[in-house]
Image (cartoon, rainbow, N blue to C red; front, side):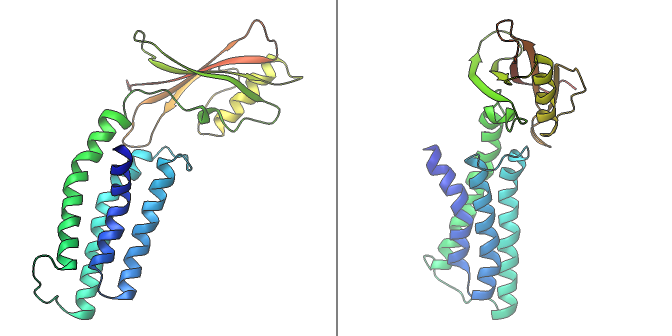
Length: 229
């Protein structure tokens, strides 16, 4: 069911516009951006693109679609004049009704999904630790969820470096994280940063600890918490 709604969410605007368009130039000028934006959202949904603005991209789908379709209809009106009165059930009339229904449906579903699912407490993905600096390896990745404590679900892993001391592994790990937008100072073994951009204001937190059994590795933990600022 979720997959069906995702496909409808992504394919709705390009398909509706394809049925509404009257001229090839305007049809392509509007259809290509609509299809390109849908392709971008699909890549984000499948985690092919890693971005902290995920929620903003989803929320931009509806207003962007309205602006593009409205601009296309106005451009075609200038080129071809007003549409002739058409009976209900005509292809273009049906497409306009479908587009309006699409906006009404997903105008409710998208914010609801982001609030109750997309922005709920979750375990960070292992990709938050990748790519690692040269010489480091990631293993023992696991998720731990408990009903107590403020951390909730955590990502736990071990980062090691053959031939490196624990301090060197920790330093290279900090460099890797700083390259992904963290601001960890030298010797800092914990910290938090914004998980998202404007909408998702939760904090993504990181902590590291020594592994007594492995002098060339550090234990890493990540979790998401509510923004308390």
